[in-house]
Length: 409
Image (cartoon, rainbow, N blue to C red):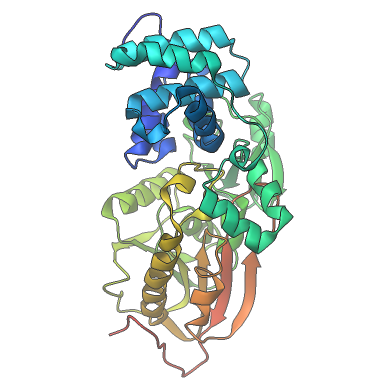
């Protein structure tokens, strides 16, 4: 895509949407593809993530206007139609400008044969703003969450249409990041112990005050609450550590952290983040479904791989990649990981089990398989703000009682 008339932000948005369709993380794709100009960069993020949050409504409108199912359209054509329809329905972009850019995008993307279709569909598309499609979620998830939460489910799903808030966590417990940001002409609001909310995101995270000096890292308050369930001990094992925020939070509290992960590439990012903020971590590549570490710790954190359905506001592509069967598959995997990780908990030690999912099959049901007493929990699934959702509990390995369960051996 190189037409001079094309806005580079829109070009980046289409490329990021196609990358997300291929399974890439939308944020990571945008980080690489979005142009440097602040206005164009903001446009790319707004359009790409806006499409993913409102895809159900956009597809409903496109289906009617095109008189054909969206899955019959070429992926680039569908991405262009979704992006333009989003701009027309949810932004101040004049309709004629959105249509013109979409036609140019189709030609530049090598699907010029569909330029007439793009033009015709966009001139009559109407995106529904009410009804189930307007909630922005697949039908199976709408039905499931309504059954679990009732009317609160709709409130939560509507809140997920807004961009996720960005929070920063201070490296030093006593640091006043708000004052440092104020000195640089930026707002930052304290929301907890060493945790701050960034009210407006403009430009790259890397360009914010204190990033290069390693004074903070990005982390959601719910994830902080999970890390803070770990009691103050000398040594702690973080079994599924990537991307590393919880390991850093534990290390910032003065604990010696051993961070492991099954993915060597993601573990390297943990090392890089730790080096940037100047916090020491011991790291090891370990697949907890297959092997343990051969050592015991007074505290073990298992933030298990899951469906990540608690992060649908922050990573809207997740809602379109999951099926109900994935919940059961994730739970089975989590049981195996938890059982093996439990063998690394010293007698009398604690194990914090967590998932970024509101689904009970992945949270309380998995924790119950260990059979250890639970002394504390964190569960914010009832929130209606669209914030990140986690379930976590702290369990005690009663002294002298061996860890038992599937997956050990």
